[in-house]
Image (tube, rainbow, N blue to C red; front, side, top):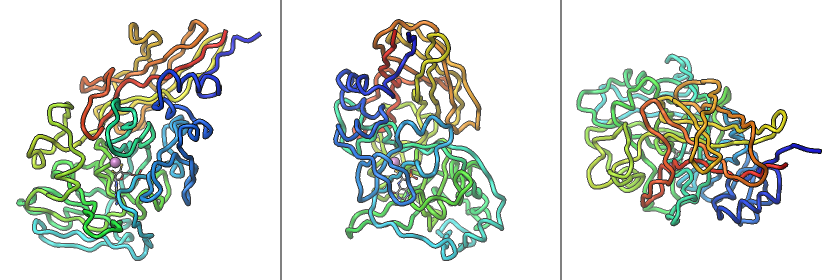
Length: 401
Ligand SMILES: Nc1nc2c(c(=O)[nH]1)N[C@H]1C(S)=C(S)[C@@H](COP(=O)(O)O)O[C@H]1N2
Ligand SMILES: [Mo]
């Protein structure tokens, strides 16, 4: 005699129902490798990593399966991997050098990792690293680019030094306009633009912007930027340069392809509170901060016919104000209970317990709102490159009688 309630995360039959009901995009909500394969997707383990969902092998682009988001911090071995170029050197931490150069500096510097570790105060914070194109694969109609599901993101405790402290030692001049960051990786084909990103002064000098040498208490994994990466809490991961080897203080806005040509959205399409004015020429403005978002990570029977729904919510650091769930297609919403707060840039866990869901299939929706007054949208905001998908998360569940 069961009043047990199972979910799409467990029952193969229910998973097929999800596929039929929601289309290929729903595959990404499931956790089984069989289902991933059924849709032509592959779970594969890179060196030092657990099996992640493969999008491309060269360059390596692998996303984190949803089950790992059941813990607030994403394990290093399960953290997603995104590279634009296929030539990725292994860097020996002892040989590593960071150059700090540029026309807007008083004293150009070269620093070793040991100097960074010992000559500057260490700072730790938890922050979500999320690709601007996370969930691109859920846009309808489809848009070009890597078809990410929900897993082009992760949440980690980063330890390193303040970029502002390093820049202070180099003496930033008043004619500085932007800081540009270059990395050790390169394109195999000549002529492919090098991956260089810049930041406005305000964000570069913000005390939470770090050069990080540790992630969740360990050195950075090879594929997540070993030995040093930029951590730009609140902003999308495109700015979080891995294996950063060169910082240049610019007296004019950066104009390379990855600033002028990519990671931009039509200005009007998305209300970004944090902007990048020196890069706002033309119709498209750079993607900057992370949009408020949430994910349902599990549903399970709890006591006496009840169903517990758990998930995470996050935003650019304005702070999660509330998470609401709906079991009736958005007609009514219930407020979830927020869990442990690991800081303003972290995933925030939440849960809600339904006491009386009618048996049968139903769709659960979740939406988060932040303290800046932003809320997730019912339909994703269309834009040519499929950035900033932050529609309500919906999962199909099967409530057993
Ligand atoms: N050196 C380097 N850093 C990079 C990139 C890259 O291609 N090369 N991609 C950026 C993008 S677009 C993303 S989404 C994040 C991914 O970080 P991760 O691979 O650690 O998950 O790295 C960023 N930093
Ligand atoms: Mo990205």
